[in-house]
Image (tube, rainbow, N blue to C red; front, side):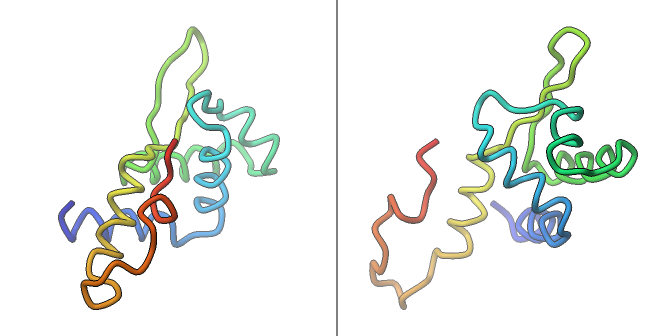
Length: 107
């Protein structure tokens, strides 16, 4: 990943509602969640929710799929793992300091 992509992803997560949304989608896994489910569970108004989902989508941290009349949002695990990899690439002065399984989500 390029530095500009990392900055965009981190900026998207640097807001409490977006961080909550992303974490909720991580827990939802590949099933994902609709905006209605997300708004109800997190107590975020529809207009606000739409804005925050758009920001996460633009940063590549979530994907959107139409299923009939519903939109399904899912966390993009590969993208988040790329961000984590970028941030930890040179940790511990190049020495292995954490088991790779501890760093990356195996979802």
